[in-house]
Length: 177
Ligand code: SF4
Image (tube, helix red, strand yellow):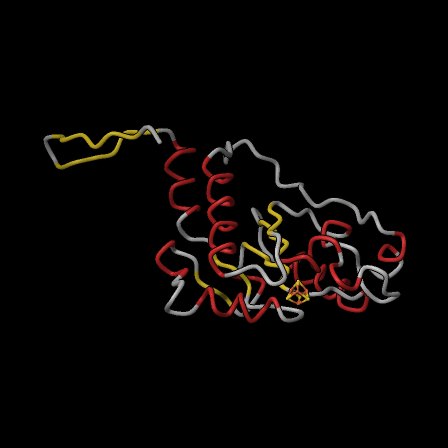
C-alpha cells in the first residue's frame, strides 16, 4: 500500500489512494459467518479459539448473515442444505467472499458417490478460495483467510460491480434453489 503520513500545520494527515485506504480497513475486518454443516466446523470453531486466535487479523464470527462478509463452507453439503446455504449467502451484504473448507466442500469428499451430497460448493456459489484437507487444520484456514485478504488488497473497490454471484451449475441444485 502506498500511503504517507504527513505533518500539516493543524496536525498529521494520511495521503494515499482511496482504494488502498478502504481496502486496508476492509481486509482487516473480515467477519465470517458462524455456520458449519459437518465435522470441518469443529476446526472452524478451533480457528476462532485462543490457540489460533483469528481475532488478531480482525476476523471475528457473526451469528447473522447480515453482518457477515465471509462465508466458510465448513463440512459436507447435502442437496437439502444447499438451498439454505444459498439463501444465507444472498442475505449477506456485498462485497462478500466464499471459502470452501475441506474435501467435502471442495468436491464432495468421501461422499462423492452419494445421491444426497453436492460435489463441491462451487456448483452453487462463487468460491474464492479452496482449502484442501479432511479436515484442514486451523492453520490452513488462517492461510485461506489471508488469501482472501490478499485478494481484497488488489480490488479496485470503488469501480467493482458486485455481481459475482454465479448461476448454479448443477442441474439437481438448480431445481432446489
Ligand atoms: S472434509 Fe473430512 S472433516 Fe471435513 S466435513 Fe468432510 S469428512 Fe468431515
